[in-house]
View (cartoon, rainbow, N blue to C red):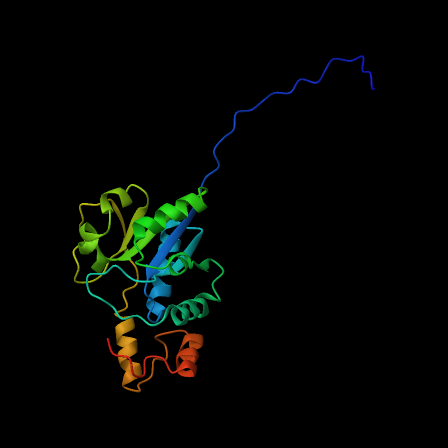
Length: 212
């Protein structure tokens, strides 16, 4: 046993302070296929809002009003991975694919909050989707769980009854349906998707026969 004759060391207990949460943007969607417009939006929103990362989250079955006959999930996941491979702050999140069924955002956000309590999530949507928000599954509860971010889009009003952060980004009139149509017409999609995605589509023969 060690004996000390001097006074005992006094330890001062400091109260715990809450560390700032990591800020992560979520880009949901079918990504059928992912194009450069998706990457530009993610980059712009990340920079303007000071996000740490943006996660790309392909859905399994989109709960859209207009049914979309999306490509099989394994192809869409692969193309997203290829699209973001050179951007260290972009991540692939396969939660909705692995969960299966209809990809309700409400269910997804509940799961993500439980899995990552240290993260503050921002759900990024296009301005064309704002008008549909009242029809989203459990939207009144969902807006209390996650901060929605809307990307302004020409021709769509910048207004909503829900709390949104509006972000003005470089406007490029580019869509996945346009790319699919170009492929069916045997036209080039160079500069519309990443080189790796373009090569993968050719390699797998995607979208050649499939019609929307």
